[in-house]
Image (cartoon, rainbow, N blue to C red; front, side):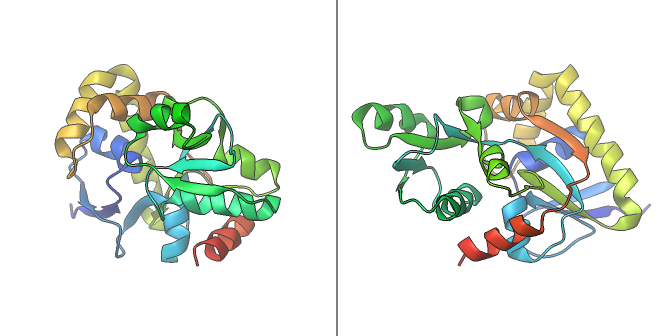
Length: 221
């Protein structure tokens, strides 16, 4: 059987498929190009002009404790920054986005007053998800991480991805260690485990998201 070609961002969206250890899928870790299956953040998929067929992970980014006036974001130009800019634009308010080198530096920056809030992965902060904030503003988000899947491969992909999720729930430490060993970049098994086990992860339909597409395009410019 010919292997299914997958292009996947080397982040949480890829973890369950890696954990499934299904050799019928050939995963290429990158954020460019097209393949039978593409896995990435919903923001990146819109920016790349790739249709979103399935929602995989929801509520991955948390505004902790909320979105204040000086908001710390780890990576400039990231999906989180684009969504924060969209939220601020819709709310018609101003705030400063402050670059943060590492998630671990956020508590110190909060204490010193350099920032009054931050966007962090869901397991590492308390607050409201960016998706919930957007939903309250009337914008439905298809998910934090999504998939574009060739129509005849939807069932096959859904089965493999769901098996990976189940393996994480049954053997979280073993699954996280394996995924960490496969990824092209160093990610701690503890982070991998928490992101999958403590976040809303399952394969569902993304729902209507035309307004989301519009705001991503607008605030990506």
